[in-house]
Length: 544
Image (cartoon, rainbow, N blue to C red; front, side, top):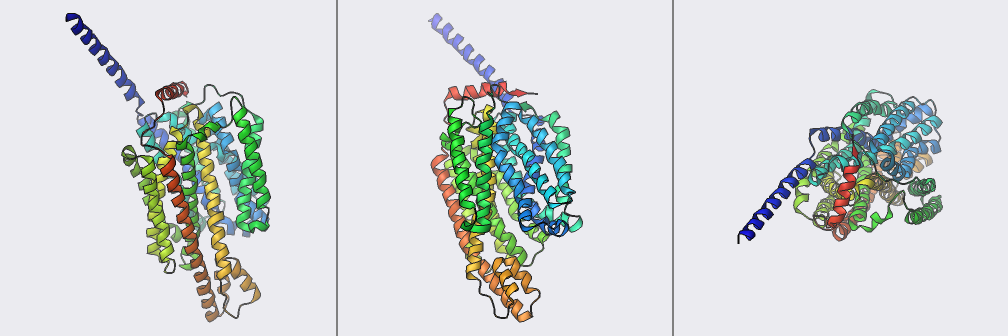
């Protein structure tokens, strides 16, 4: 009996010792003030890159007057940046895993800032295009590095979920702030100011990141495969170019051949990754439902957001007559709701399974699109504001959860490559949002525009081309004809908005179905051995 008691007491002491030793380890997982300061520093490039996605369109008219680019050059001024950026995201994410994510972030910030200065003072369209391509090259180093660094800075999952909520909210906020920032700068300064914006944002990053952000990398990265880099770039650039060509020229342009080339190279890239011992991108990640499902949710959500902004921005400015600055301000309530929802979903994510939470959130986005479809004839500012608030609430919550799942499902050593895939989905979503939603809206507008009699041929051609062309043509016409043209153009455009909104709602429903069938439960079910291996990798890759 005494032996049993002694054994029991010994067991109790050992259990207590294990618990006491476990407690400090658990506590040490919690990030301190330094980590949250590092998050604030990492938000600087996030805001900059997302603002840069939308701000340039407001500067194009002034650039066209100053540099006098051809129509092809004007298109390349816009497209050079996203084409290079999307093509290099996976490569840069993998290089960050190998050589250091903080190091790549600092190199990217330096190059981004210097080439932004060059773009601001470019004396010709050719040099501006070259500068934009260079900005895309260094911009591809920024976003994957910021997201992957969160994986190593915040080891506690609840803290990491909140940090990713801040990251996702900042990215969404930047996209919506672009029109406001662009409108303000262009009302007070020359067009180069939209590029010089990078300097005051990136200088604090270059000073503070070495002090606050820890370095991290894959301890066993393997060798770099140059052919994989070439195939990755060769697959993404033609594919993105095909989407843009489809939006501008339809199937009559080179969209199908470009898409075919991109698809062939993508297949070759995937096959090579499966054969390599140290692949540029670990294709096994896509076998995890939580990873691939979250990527698709991000892609479709961004398509929905960008597509909505595409037609709402035109309606606010061309139909309701708001200035670019006022139109941007009109979107602020929706922006605020998006940010608050992205942060507010964190406590819900602790209690609800992603397969339930994300579809429920996306239901709010579907409601936003349906509000637009049902009130398009009215098109009042109040209804559009409510619709954007509903859309933003759903997307803000869904993106926080999906981005956290992307990082959770990727081993810490491969966080850069996984983050790059997520960023590629964002970039493709932005391009597809304009191409799909804009293309459908434009096609409907042209097919259903009923021009009033009395127009000149030039005015009729310009009016059929775009809503902006119709409103500009109306300026020089007698008032009865001008009123008829404005009314006809607004009616055709609003009819297209109804169709586009229903398609946008359908895309969000598809995203909700994907989330419900792939994202799994609220807690990961990875085997304990996998988790301990990840923990060991994370500990081994975290250096000051």
